[in-house]
Length: 333
Image (cartoon, rainbow, N blue to C red; front, side):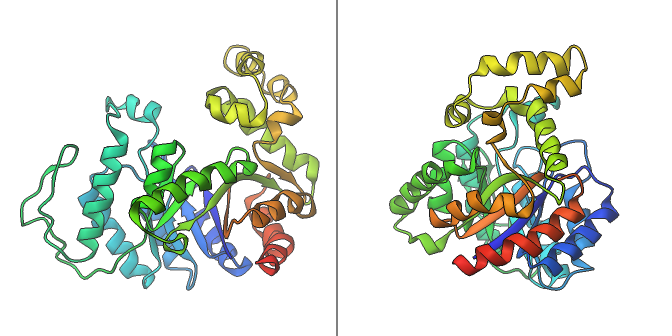
């Protein structure tokens, strides 16, 4: 059984050093940080974490091959891997179309781009000369190879769509699929397993992290308030599939979004978040979290990844999860 924790890249860099240390002490196996545009860059964040930890693996969640070329991804990952003593994980994904639109980058053929990226990254990490000929990444010459020592750094693919989930099973070493809600695990697993079958791989070839939203703390009401806030801001952008899984109509988010965007009344927007909407994540005290998490393990999950908002206090969230949740779930495996 594996456990990881995910953070957005919106905190002062030095805070991540303390959070990574705390996560390692709490028993987490992996520490992931995002790389959303116009916030703090993920590579210095993870490098700083590498200097204050000894065991926990450190990963990007995610970098994309539109704003960062796979050749540069490989360079940064190898440097982090050397600094951390072999603890780097490279999480990649197609990125958010809205963010890429900010900088005038069309997100064309994302699946093809991701497959080509994984192919060249794997070759680079193997020390090969990458004579790649692709429709997305162009033509590479025999001079395209790493001049520094490397190892097969694990490549994790962030995914939500069926074809991208299949690509986890076909090409990746690990997967970072968002489960909205956590009970969506069976559907996600089905697509990943289809990819495994197409590639003739076994399930143990891929570390599939069940990525969930969680908000936890000793004060259950405060924890729920944080999750309500996140859903109020982002709920209107959820896909039709996610809304169907929740049993929620898109029309229900119209007044919430209006309160946020037009009236700037966050309190009223949060008050309109319904219990069905809250099911997108898991919230409460450590004990409150356990029933749905135990069901996730019973469904076959062997890696649970706890992600934002995490709770009113991220340090408290790490402590509560490490003290009350991880030992129980680890004993089930």
